[in-house]
Amino acid sequence: MSNQSPLSEKQAGLHQLYSEDPQRADQIVWGRKANPLSRRGFFERLGLASMTAAIGSEIVFADKMPSGLIPAALAQSTEPFQIPGKEGLSVMNDRPLVAETPAHLLDDAITPAKHLFIRNNGLAPAPEMLDADKWTLEIAGESCEKPTTFTLKVLKEKFTHHTLQMVLECAGNGRSEFNPPATGNQWTTGGVGCPKWTGIRLADVLKHCGIKKDAVYIGYYGADAHLSVDPKKNAISRGVPIAKALEDESLLVFAMNGEDIPVQNGHPLRLMFGGWAASTCGKWLKKIVIRDREHDGEKMKGHSYRMPRYPVAPGTKVPEEDMVIIAEMPVKSLITFPKSGITHPAADKLAVRGQAWVGEGAVASVEVSIDFGITWQKAQLEKPANRYAWQQWRTEVSFPKKGYYEIWARATDDQGRSQPMVLPGWNPEGYLNNSCHRLAIQAA
Ligand SMILES: Nc1nc2c(c(=O)[nH]1)N[C@H]1C(S)=C(S)[C@@H](COP(=O)(O)O)O[C@H]1N2
Ligand SMILES: [Mo]
Image 1: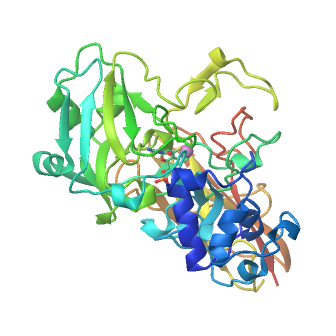
Image 2: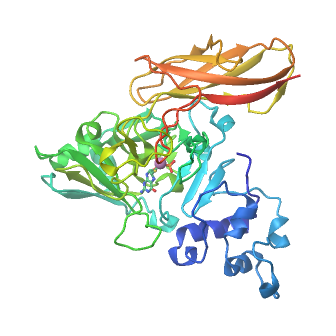
Image 3: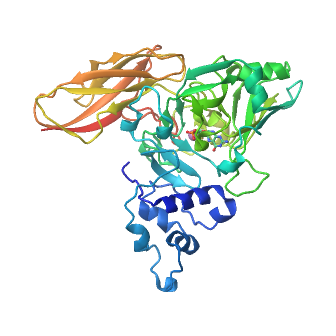
């Protein structure tokens, strides 16, 4: 978690450039597996051209430089790694850019923009391409009666605005704990956040364009590029069944926490579906198709965002036809205070608090344990701001004597489903790990 990569502003700028300019991005050599990106890892992935650019002059004896060496000019930088507009995120990959939020930075009731995680599947559009005044959204598809292209301005004027606090969680959040490990970003706990979103109902817009009787699904297309930079390929194009698309909380959002959505989080327009895997929430949204079949865009087929329809032993190869699309997210909680690893006076009570959420329904209780799940004490639990918002919880724990403790938190929803203490069922892509969050505490 603490693999923050100190980079100067100039280097961060370079990083940004490489994430957004396909041709230049191609000069970076990437390992297949996304490990937490240390400063060392970051520079190891840079080619000579980019290191030279970062230093600002030619590396004269470059041909004699041991491979993997970080030029001291870069290594000595003490400035923290920065993604513009973000603070304190752990960068797991930068092509595509993926960054998660340490648990203690998710302590706010409403997640601030600077602390919302980033999960890009391709190359984000360059900021200068994201002009809200010129942005358009096309509604089409074989089950759309009147295909229409709207300007964002017209959408904002024509349809009623709604503001809702809603959890956004990547289906891969928690993946790093599965064994055998799944390939892909090794999320710990930070692929989640709960900002306040403002937008218009997707249902209002779809109904305006006419939904044919045979409609079963919607699919989205965004303005980002596939990693291969092939314009015929989409980085990701997922969707939801029509019933989910028509829910009151399913929104086309143009603002977050009362401001523009951060560039990496989908400015100027994105989808938000309450409680479902965040991969359904298309960013930099350009087009929505109303489909007469399950949407078949990029990352809808094969093993992407799918779970085996039956429990499997760890390491099992599951045939494609036995994989089903992930819908709502499972019940889960985070301990956001204190920070893991602290030392606390053994004689003093310790205030503990966090967030709890579930894809559909509400969280009914949160319990905390300091004895590895043998006994549990009930925490005080707030009501959600609205359906699909997370719920804050708090309690105090006291330690019987000095020593090492773990604080575990476990949420249970209103259907009686709770979090597994160790791990939920293994699955090939490492999705939906909602096991109890654990903190390490030294009582001294
Ligand atoms: N256009 C587009 N939309 C996208 C993605 C993407 O790569 N491109 N990633 C999806 C995935 S997998 C996740 S988890 C969420 C992440 O949203 P965030 O980056 O705002 O946190 O966006 C989803 N929407
Ligand atoms: Mo995701």
